[in-house]
Amino acid sequence: MKIISLSIAALITPCAVASSFDFHFLPASTAHQTLSILYPLAGTFIGDYDVTTNPTGTRTIPGYFGGSGNQAIPYTSKLRLGDALDSNPLGSFKLDIGANGMCTITNFTTDLVNETPGAVTIDMLFTYSSFHTVAPNAIFPSVGEITIPIATGSLKVATAVQSGPAVGALVETAPNTYTISIPIPVNVLVAGSAAGQPFGGDPVPAILAFAGTLTINGATATFISSAASTDPVGPLPALPALVNQPLPVPTVLPAGSTANLLLSGTFSEGTGTSVLNISVNATGIPSYVLGDMNGDGHVTGQDLAYLLSAWGTANPTADINQDGIVAGWDLTALLSNWGA
Image (tube, rainbow, N blue to C red; front, side):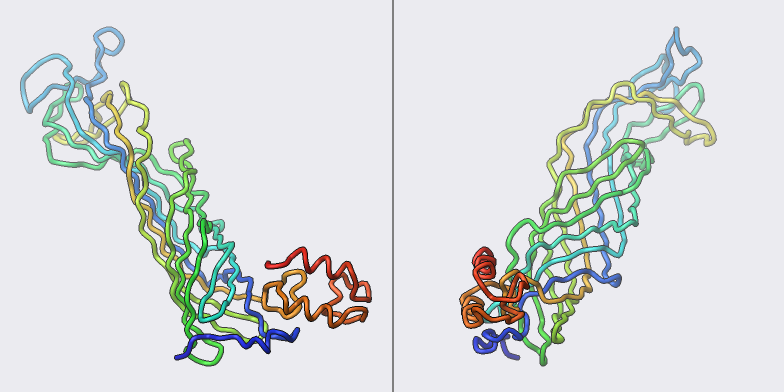
């Protein structure tokens, strides 16, 4: 294998092979995104019985039998928010091929939803001491952590947008075919709604380390690559405290009834994990930069030399504004993009 190289002599001509391509995702691209956030919660719950306003309400009493009144039962819990998305994402980016087998990617952005909303679930992981209830009469043995469904919703926005420089390597494996390895820093943002309430909007930094194949076929190119990233989320600000939040709970022994509880507690900061697996199948065309005479994606001295050599002629390549003559306006346009 040999490192890709570009001939300076070839670059001087206006028909040189492009070294800069604008890519867009094809429908064969896929994405799998998940987010899981946990908010620790601790407090007590009690039956909704009230001697004046709800005398037939549920009463809670510690233990399996005996006792009286309506007593608070301690608990620990975690509120869990999760989403899952499988889609064919939209996206685009610019790839520049440099010297010595180096390459860069800029303007990488992808819409992971692409009109396919993901699923959102909210549940509570609940641990409590054994208790029994009156109205209904039931026993709730302590059985470790149980899961209580709270709400469902939809993931309406999921994006990954480049957040910094991306420099990688190309190695030629066959004529016009290269392996490519390039890490792209991105911000992953998700947003949606659950139980009628919006959530999300805070970007999570991630690194998408793409590895795959780049093939150049004259004026077109294909990019097939995949990347995976697992990144921490948080800490996130604690949620507002719960005060007498109604919580209907199905009875355990016997089953078939509902105990109506009031939940109070204080949240701690939230933490979680964001996972993004993406496979990109993209097609590219040469990038166009005003003043780029030789099609290498950059405006440099080679382009200036070509324009000056065509000064006063109707050369269509050097005549940037297509007014029929290479003159001052064309030079101004080229210099305005110098180094681009």
